[in-house]
Image (cartoon, rainbow, N blue to C red; front, side, top):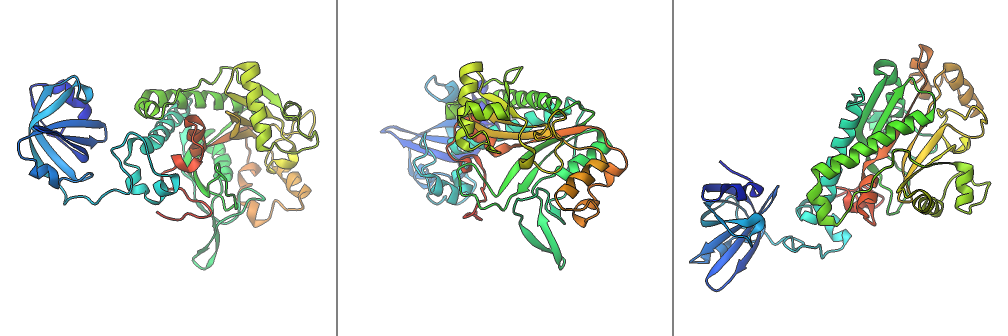
Length: 427
């Protein structure tokens, strides 16, 4: 029976079988070493005598090895396999596009992305997705623990979800359709069914961004729930969710964090909150601005670290003119919204807030935009509101951006398995 490399130290004196990829071969005068890589790490195999077979086992060839485990403090985990019988499971592998055995990645990001199916085998390259996978686990666990129901909603839709954003159009049996920009409409409707819902799924944005922080397709972590007082209730659930994601990364992806030299931050129990109007003052921005520029976000992030010792800060009360029509206005001053952005290390990570929940409010909001609630784009969405919806709100986290900020990656593509952007549709 096959064991994994991390189990070898517990099997000293026993005959074992391991299998994986030839990570590296090291030849000395009297002995050689085959370093085998599997999903759990590296194993050292000692090869004595004839080197002919070892010469035929090029790096990345898949092999199975049976031998006896011997203690060796200098080997990975303090043990190695001796007297091996090596059986190739594939023909000799072609030379990889990057040297996977080196501890660091020598190739630039374009080379890594062009050769992602193989480059992701490098322990440093794959570390980003190990962290992402752990964060996904934490997201699901945190919300499931608060009685949320996981849902899956359509990614082929008949209308755009977010006004003003470009969409990917497609032919749907001879008629127009679009790739979903967000599960927003569906997750709101499902509040009327389950009260608390979340979704993990891809979203598609055809906006022509060519920056280090935007993708045309990314994984969105969405949550929506009912019977709230205002957006501060949403922020509280978001805070506990992010805390759960960070805890899961620490518990499940410790090796990946170590490989990348990353130290996990803490999200404070009371996340600092600043109103949008005050945020403009902190950033020394024009008081008439209706949104925060990247430089403004960085300035506010620096303020939060300096004044509150926090890597996280929430900016609330964005102007209604910059928020979607379903956003609830601030009751005391309808110029501002009951919404927020959560900034992490000076970059917007999450958008959330309270939604409108009365049908009459939607009619008025759409009429103010010169649109009708009876239009095909909205009529099916608003069915739920005609039949009673509680006060509700929610948020959405971009998974790849979360990992990029956590790891300090300069480009979000570095922590995306197969990124899609203006210029990349393969591999």
